[in-house]
Amino acid sequence: MNVMITGYGRMGREIENILIQRGHSIALRVDKGGYGDCTEVTADGLKGVDVVIEFSLPQGIENNIRLYAQSKTPVVIGTTGWDDKKDIIKDIILNNKSTLLYGSNFSVGAHIFFDLVSKAAGLINNTPEYDIMMLEYHHNKKKDSPSGTALTTAEKILKNNNRKEKIWTDKLDRAIDDNELHVASVRGGQIPGIHTVTLDSFADSIQITHNARNRSGFALGAVMASEWLQDKKGFFTVEDFIEELLKK
Ligand SMILES: NC(=O)C1=CN([C@@H]2O[C@H](COP(=O)(O)OP(=O)(O)OC[C@H]3O[C@@H](n4cnc5c(N)ncnc54)[C@H](OP(=O)(O)O)[C@@H]3O)[C@@H](O)[C@H]2O)C=CC1
Ligand SMILES: O=C(O)C1=N[C@H](C(=O)O)C[C@H](O)C1
Image: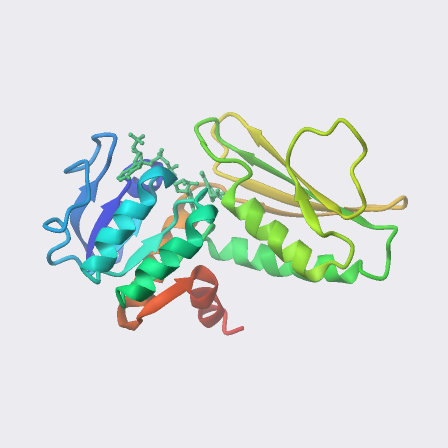
């Protein structure tokens, strides 16, 4: 595949390594910060591109996706922090009969973590003595919080647990309500990403953690998802790809 990389930062570079290891070619590196071959996505730059992999920042995402969709170039999006634009972006893709796959976390391990957390959140439905909460740590350059992965995990807890109805992420000046799921974020150092869900009772505590040792798992998952997308049309999430991969 001839691949455009949009966002040539920490993830863009890791993706380039994996693309080369898997025999793909790099069509163009687009980076607003000036680290790539050019600073903007253009219709001209998309000529001859089989797929775009974008790990950028949320501000310019709608404009970029419009250009991919108009040229019917499939795109894999790993950028987080644009949940408020999901409906508009889905419409852009479907109206242009184009292709997009989005995921808040492309590492296979994170999806095993999501499954374990979903199961655990349901197992405590009839045992109210167990409460459930979440904490995530990321490096000091991360611009969004909570992380996209934390929001995906929280959605899965709300779906499977019959007591938690909403997420609480801000500072508290009162006790947490029983129906609120506390999701806390810590930023500092070089941490690629740690997500821990804790189930806690008077008697004991259970912790489920996904600890990314580096960014290679995210990058490999994104490249594999872009290979999977080659013969597809429409709006997909990483779960569609992982379900097939893990034969769920
Ligand atoms: N889904 C997943 O598995 C993962 C997702 N992520 C997400 O990926 C994103 C990028 O992370 P990371 O690589 O660490 O961030 P970096 O800041 O290292 O890299 C992002 C790069 O994209 C550039 N950029 C911003 N907007 C645009 C644009 N519109 N067009 C082209 N380039 C642009 C930035 O330039 P400038 O600095 O000038 O804005 C920057 O150089 C984040 O949203 C992060 O949360 C990260 C890891 C895994
Ligand atoms: O910004 C990061 O670094 C990461 N972002 C993603 C997220 O917001 O969940 C995935 C991973 O945790 C690393």
